[in-house]
Structures are given as structure tokens and as C-alpha cells.
Length: 507
Image (cartoon, rainbow, N blue to C red; front, side, top):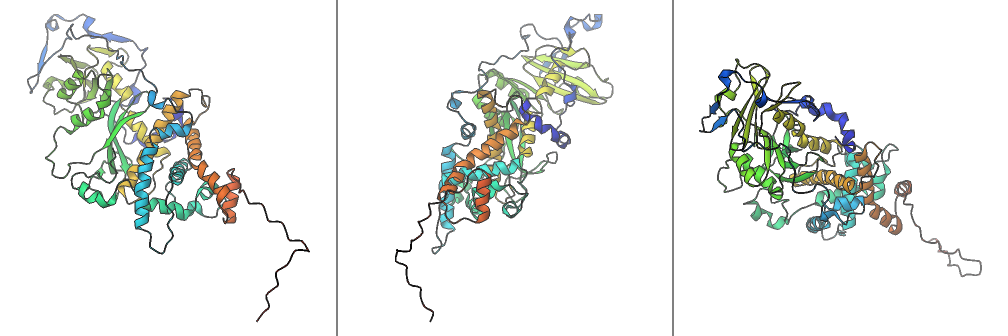
């Protein structure tokens, strides 16, 4: 794992309770230097020299010996080079890397809809102060700093109170009332047209113009597409499908699961449709995809092969393409593996526990190689190396989350967008500047600190130069964070010769 996520190791036990798979845990992973054995080259008994075939309920016949025509190298050379694209060529600062994902176009739309809500909630006698771009960026910066300092779950009042233990950055940036006003007015669509759009789109309140798995944004308030996943930390929340790069943990694509839309027919093959939509930007890239048994199916693997993508995934035991010999039973001993080959696909069955077999389908490996030390198929080891990528991103989001308690699900989604954008921004920044804090640990903490301070710096500078009547505590907070008040030159004191106004007499 890269050094910039070393600080996540403190919470490793925290996630062990719900990170799992049908195969064994990550401790079963081995390095590429481990010896391998090719079962095909071993001497076979006289009874096993004949070509064995396994039939399934679906009619697919699997061969126990790989075909020479499909036996290719298991290495997966991608057509596209990894690293920053031309989209990031103008990134010169940490804030620029973040704005690649939370762009000014997005913030400008949020600003328009939030000011519309602000005007609706303002009475005729009340003075209206529209939210500015500077304030929205500072608001996001305070959310990031709050997550970094562990204040996301604290009440807003406690963060702004007079206390030497509280950070002065919040009080110096904006008042508590202004922060609460921005939260209450934050909108992501036109509220006046939402009802009409909501009839055909449940996600209308926020919708705007590799390993695959699910991520849950904790949310317990009533929502038409709230999910319950007992193995996740938050258990109740909004489910998102994520496609994540295995090596860098870069989130390539994501979209929410909102169930069946109004007036939509019952959905079938949800797993396959999710995978195909997430991988749409990666077609013809010759990449490998790792998925769990919710998504994996033989038709999906064949369709991905047509799009120059390979796949490794676990299979549910009720799939009709699985021969009965590959299923778990009491007669099968722990350790030996079965392999089946059909049309460029490899089916592997590995008994890792008594009466339990891990079933994997693969289009990347086309042989029956196993590891000499532990007897596990190379397909299982390859899957174990990549299976927990989305869970790692979920862990990083929880570690320094910008999410605050809310009863509005669009705001919960916005907090999740900030967390993922910050992770992607760090990956882009490290790719563009590999020497940045290279020898330091906790690089993600340093990145979030610099990003948060960069987003609030413009408002701090503006406030220190233009504000005239600030509380003494606020002036002290500005001075502590490096933005002392710039006071106007005092008017010269009148001399004795100047005409003094007469003092008004008492009645």
C-alpha cells in the first residue's frame, strides 16, 4: 500500500468485521516470487490421461485441460498509460488538483440554486446577503478541516464557542450564523421544478449534467432509496457503486443505486448493467476487472471480452453454469482444486474449508497453475490482491470525513462527493509532484491541511482587510491564523487652535 495511506492503518481492526469475501482474507496473498507449479506438466495416472469433461445445467461443457488455442499469457498489458491525463496539465497547486473534481462550474450551479433558496427564506424586512463563490469555497475548506481535526460529529455551536481547546480557524473564517445559513440554504437543483422531475427520477434533487463494489454513505432519515447493509459500518445509508483503480485507489467512476424509477418495469440483471455502465470509459483499454459474486456471470464475462476487458470474480453456487463436481461437498478434501475451461473462460473451484468451496470465474488466466506453498490457484491469489480496493476507499472516507449530521439526503451526497474528490485530488497531486513530502508519513493529513487552508485563505484575507466591526475574539483568531486586522489610519487629534464643538447642556 502506498505511503500516503499509511495513516489509515490505525483503523484496520475497525473494518475487519465487515471486509470479507468468499475466498480467504488478504493474509493468503503471496508475492510474485513464490514458486508456481503447472499441473498440466505433471505425470498423470493412466485413468486421468483421457480428456475429462464437466457438464452444467445450462448446457455449457467445461474441459479439465486448457485448450492450446486459448492458452495465453496471464499478464494484462493495458493499452492506456496510467497517470495524469491532459485534463490535469494545468494543475499547479493543491487547490487546482481538488478543483479538477469539484470544478467551478459545479460550484457555480450550487451557488445559483443556494442563493435562490436564500432569497425564498428571507423576509421582506430582512437584509439579504447573497452567498459568494469565496464563501462556498471557504465552507468546503472548513468541512475538510473539520474532518481532519475530528470535529465532523461535534455540534456547530461547540466548534465556535470560546474555548482555548478549539481551533481558531473556524471563528476566523466566518461566523457561526453564516456557516449555519449556508448549510440551511445549500441546494443542488431548482426547487420549483423538482416535483415534476422527481416523478421520473428519484435522484432529481442532486443529479447534474479497477475494482467494482459498493460504498454506503451513512444516512438514517427517511429516503426513497435508503439501503440496509448489515456488514457495513453505517448499516443504513445511500448506496453507491464505485469503480476504483487497484494500484492508486483512484475512483474512476461512481453512481448511486436508487432502485426502480417511477413507472419503470422490474429490473433484471442489475449486477451486469452496473458493471457495464461503470466500465463505459474503459472500453478497449485491455484492463482487468475484479468483482464479487453479486456481479459475476458468464454472459457478463463474454460481453466484456468483446470490449477488450478481462475479469476475475467470485461466483454464487446457484449459478446454472457451474457443474455439480465443482460444488462443495463433504467428500472433497481441503486443498485440491478443480479447473474448467470453455471458450476463453476459466472456472476454478478451491476448497479452503471443510464443505466450503470458493468458485471463481476468470477470463484473464487460461491455465491451471497453483501456488506450490499453499496449493491455492493463481486465480484465487490474483483476486485476493485486488478484492478490497473499494473497502479501502470507504475506510479512507470514514477516517477524515467532511460529513456532518443532516436530515437532507442531497446534502449527505454532497459530503460524500467532497470526501471522494479529496482522495482523487491527492492521487493526482502525488502523480504530478512525486517528490512532495516524499519522506514524510501521514501525507494525506498534510494534503488535507494544505487544501483546507488554501480554500479558506481568500476569505480570511478579505475579512481581515475589509471588516470594521469584529469581535475581539475574532480579531485574535485572525491574528493567530496569520491574517491580522488591517486597521484604517486614525484621524489626527485636533489641536488647541481648532474649533471645538460646544458641549450640549443638560436639560
